[in-house]
Length: 304
Image 1 (tube, rainbow, N blue to C red):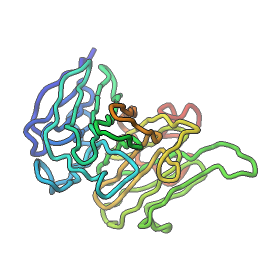
Image 2 (cartoon, helix red, strand yellow):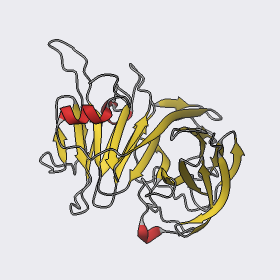
Image 3 (tube, rainbow, N blue to C red):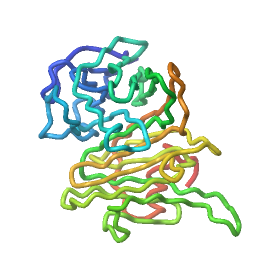
């Protein structure tokens, strides 16, 4: 039976990274900057995550950089508070089947970020615990915001709600000012929203939904990446009440989950959990719901 191994490696120009592997898949977390996961994929195969070439290996400085990979923010988004640079080293130590990453307290916000990453010993499943701690002197309301930047060339599937509300509406879609409704990468269907990443299309696009089914999928590299997160019915979420957001441009597609908004007193914390899974030999789907359901059957769908 495979065992989880943890070792220090260099990766993408950062000398002090930590690799977590079970022989099936591996993850790489940076410790020169972060907290951040910069790789996830089948051992010896392509990285499912985006790595920004222009910022590989960079550290230090006062400017926020989009390194790529998986990161932890707090929502609602703000030009100052959200974009506090994560260019400094993070502390880390081993935990059972994984590691814990801890960032220094953000001087501007008083928030401390932590990420616990654990890997199944015999499957592709990853468990991620994100934690924000209010180390300031005043209460703050925020949502834990978990963002995964995926590599180019894939197709994202987001489930719509299937709730029958009779004569009342049952779906909400939040749109950002730069999101064009006729974007050629977007396909709105009855059961699913599809969003393609196209390196030839530079214009950004973003939307959000209350993801009641709690999952989203990304098809790429003949692989299927699935992100799970619990949607908490009746809770207050940011950005018009959405628990899932996605953003695409010419060099990545971001899969983003959010926790409910929470008023955090000094010394208190908020946590947010995701699980990831990765499947091999899965074709890229067309904009056809029957084909999508066939590909997802047995993975997140119990029936077609």
